[in-house]
Figure 1 (spheres, rainbow, N blue to C red):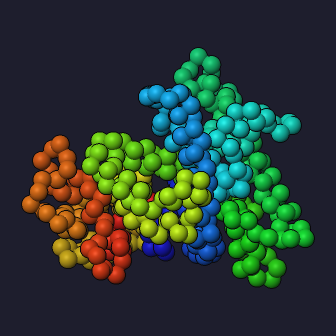
Figure 2: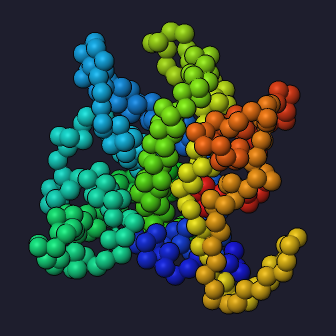
Figure 3: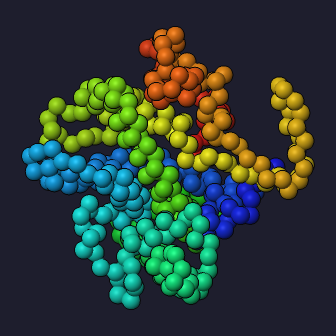
Length: 382
């Protein structure tokens, strides 16, 4: 971490609303990582799981209502994946639970143009580029040029998004300082608790700026990568129905026999080996973070089995996630019972290029049900 540092350009985008664990270096990074690592735990995973089920039930109800007892088609599935993602991130991240349909009628708070969800969605759409522009520039963008309508909507979103986030943060502080003082199972509440618990001399571990910055990372910066991963998974399962059938076998085995019985995270999540392997395989082939960028703080020397590399100071260095995830020495025919069979692709290519979720499933009796890649060989989220 001290030798290969986050480049300054990262801060322009990821640090737009405050310093955070993805944009910081040195002691600041170590401090934030300690707090953040303590927050992402089973309690949060359970919240994400439960919120995902609620949102997916909303999606299915919408599709089935359109079917009216018959077959129906929709070209809105990717939009629905985005909707599920933003609602889950909002609920699990900020404790702002949103019903599948309710946000359509939600009104902004008095004095604001946008609701929290609307501001969040608009900011998310701009993360790839326009978010770095000053607000005055967005407001003055000529109407005859492309992007005018979007920038006119983005300008108030850039102003109001941090205000909405601060409002939710203050409300959570008030709630936890009340008589009950109970910490809720969302990232914001857990982040507040971890920051205050680990602080010294009465000071919180995370500053207000760092709290806002890390909440932005959790609720917004990861939106596109998550929604895209879900979309890729759906397309691949449609493209290769044999793996869809394989997954459905597991679903039938782990789901309660009684449809009215709640889907329990504690009893079900440890059993979903095939579903997990599908998602791991999607992330391997369609890596959300293609290049992990770092900047050398000083001249570096890297020794490998092939050669010695000398890298000067101030040099942009990239880890190529795609190349790592297609390394034949690691992935080719991994956990393949019949390696002589052709890979499940239309093209006659090597196995590492194939969508084959079973490569992640270890043989019965193994120490772990799922394959654990060697450190540094699997970095979909950087």
